[in-house]
Length: 210
Image (cartoon, rainbow, N blue to C red; front, side):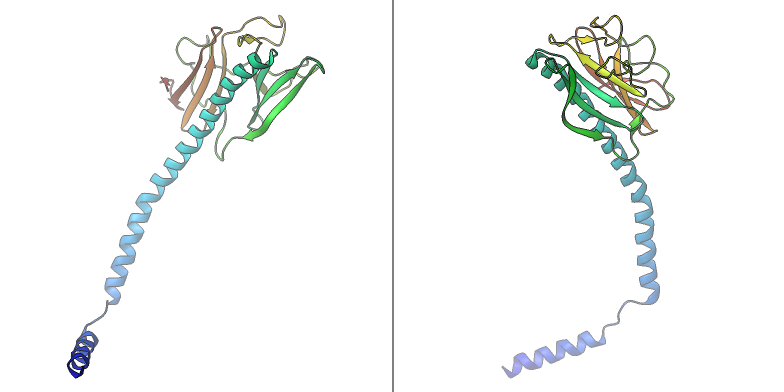
């Protein structure tokens, strides 16, 4: 036991003789941490922004697909209602008995920094639209056009249709676009109906189907 105590005392004395970090050492470590943080922060911010817009774009694309299926299952019309001013979107199904549009599920707002638009892009995805632009404006229950809105409407056969004259005519150049200023995502619908998902930089029309 005495040998163990003696050994412990020798170790403690040796530890007491060791020198700690100097101020220069600490400053060097702090500076290194600052450099690493300054390098990593922009990369993290950019990655988060890209994640947010892709998540919004996929949610919007999925809602368009859901509207198509909901119209067929309800033997009615269904639409994705986009409010471009408020940057919100929702699913609506037409109640044929009450002759009114009924919202199903939540009204979703795009993420911070994400808005409806296509930036400086001047050309649509290939073989989709003659000129880039949003789907036709939504209409209210009385058939009046609602400003700053866009709707993709499906009939009971899952075909995208017009809701302004001539009402019910198939339409094949419908699209939604969202951007964060750096990139643009688009969801397009043809008369077939084929729903496609696109991506491009916000500075030029280099569309890539996702």
